[in-house]
Length: 273
View 1 (cartoon, rainbow, N blue to C red):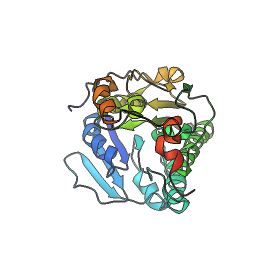
View 2 (cartoon, rainbow, N blue to C red):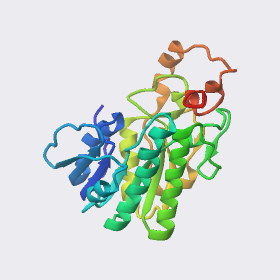
View 3 (cartoon, one colour):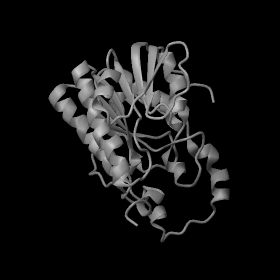
View 4 (cartoon, rainbow, N blue to C red):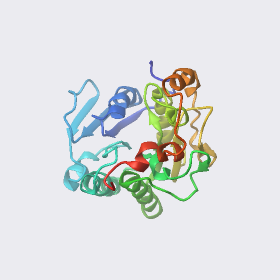
């Protein structure tokens, strides 16, 4: 799918963490068009740098390395984290200590805008028959969702005390197409992901804003009215995939917690079993 049509916004240097992950690899190719230099990092090996790129293999739990990583950076797209439900021993260094290290490095280096990849799993224990917005209380569906709620609170603290602006994007399901009926509500196309990321980086004033990352789907559980100032206007919809998805998954079990709650299978998997 071609990159989204967006205004030509130029930064001197952007940092993309988590660049070796699935969404990071997709956004790496797209974000390069919006800056003179794209610095990409991950704790895993990275593809070699192309023209206009810098690469760094950095573990987020290494405070000194993260401080160096944020030098001479205009803004950060922070995707780096454990991205699925895992035991606490895996969540803590990347998602808790790593998030703190990143914000403290931003403060010390004078970075004033961060896009924080939060998750819909911050509110995964709301039901699928509810529509919620960013001001409803968090209801994490596991340790992963809990760590993302911590990241949002950390972003709020660094805005209130240090003036670092953040858009916390509660990403739904960013894939080429929805994989199941749940994703008919949560899906966000890669083009819309790019639109949202660019809007979050370039909106004049965001303070700390929480926004749900989704396309313009016919079915939705999330209301983004409190984030309209970001300027994100999705242009894609999961509706084109509905017939194929429902043919693959014609029957749902209404007693299954993964069907009842917005977090899907996250509400019944992980280290609590």
